[in-house]
Image (cartoon, rainbow, N blue to C red):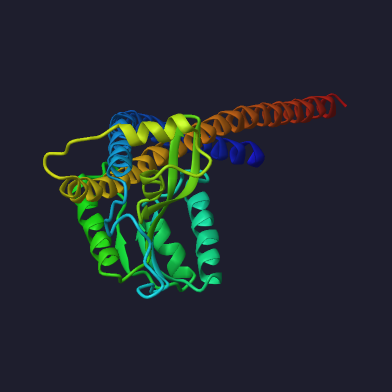
Length: 303
């Protein structure tokens, strides 16, 4: 009877855990749907701003802007800023582990190259991880289920100020890139200098003649001037790229938690069925034993 009671208690505990994981799965699904709309809705804007910057830089030609180019040998500080975006809560599968491993690889590569890392960590999981490694963190922030552009803008302005004042050589973001609901990838984004813009300001060697002639023939008139437009658009490009990284990270977190909780719920169902079968066998064995004892007692009384 003791074995049957233990199985009943364990089955009840599994049933309670299943209720919790099922509820967390439903909450993560609702948050994912809301976050997906924001991430998918802002991505075309972010890509279009970058496209506009590329076209503007290509049409101007020898464009000069402090956000476009890496520091020279005279102004290089060998110091870079790294933003690591993690979550405040666990139970999200391999989400935090993947981001932190990717950030760790990037940090080791940069330190091997003689760089000093200024860490900016978003999310309690990342803060705990780097505290355990005894790495100094320059700024800590809590991850939000609904990132606000106002908060991200302040952080982007801080990086722009440090970069333009030659305090740091570059800014990078380690986050989970949301590609689709079925695919997310831990990645490191170069936020500053703006990668991929300066290369398009002049035609690459080996490009086709038609492409070169197109750049030579097309002339744009700017109102206001191209430099004023770049002064306005380039900081906006940095802010929108950082905001998109936070949105992608949040959406990926909800996907990971939704998948993890669904897997936990399915495993609880399987365990509950297995425990029910064990209980039935134990109960059947107990009943058989009791019947055997009764029949033995009856036979003894007859004798």
